[in-house]
Amino acid sequence: AQKITQTQPGMFVQEKEAVTLDCTYDTSDQSYGLFWYKQPSSGEMIFLIYQGSYDEQNATEGRYSLNFQKARKSANLVISASQLGDSAMYFCAMREGSSSTSGTYKYIFGTGTRLKVLA
Amino acid sequence: DAMVIQNPRYQVTQFGKPVTLSCSQTLNHNVMYWYQQKSSQAPKLLFHYYDKDFNNEADTPDNFQSRRPNTSFCFLDIRSPGLGDAAMYLCATSRGGDWYNEQFFGPGTRLTVL
Image 1 (cartoon, rainbow over the protein chains, first blue to last red):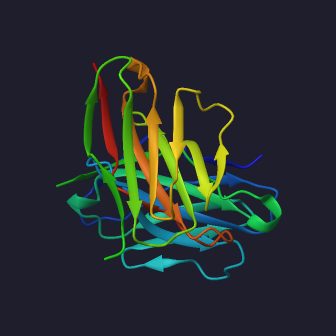
Image 2 (cartoon, chains in turn orange, red; image 1 turned 60 degrees about the vertical axis):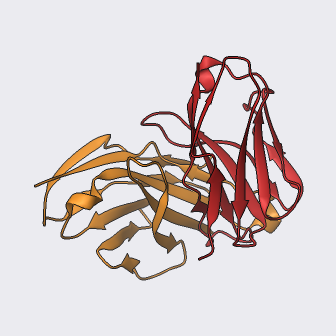
């Protein structure tokens, strides 16, 4: 069964430093997508970055990059040059396969990591 | 800008008094989702629609119902809210299709049950 594991309930990082948030996943499907979302205290889920199972390059979006290690089934989020506004809850999520075969459009979420950026 | 809109942002209801939360989208996405999220927890999927096809999660209580009258709108009805239903309710959309499509979330409705 598909599963997302985020083992860090909370993390601290000093402003302007880089931080890595861990995510491991379990799936038997060859085709899947991995997503990271940021959720500030206001509650809205903000899409950050996507990595596809067939992508050979690690995804990058501005200060966000994804360290994708397929053999280890990990998709860690790296935030460079942390800012105070990065303080939030971060969720890793996965969507499996083709809906034409799975018949589903569901995304599985991890339990999240709360990041606090210190001034 | 295309977006997902939820109304109201904050809803207070009384124990047992029916309440309806609404979600609309301008993205023209096929799939709409309702999630329940309690403090510091992952969002929990309640149900989703692909167009008018309804998919209920096995552990979603019967107290929760949903309607999708057209592509743009989706409603969450809580027939008899209990104290345990106090939570953030998130609506999301996606294009459907395959695994590379991300979800777009609305700002959420925070429900308080008195």
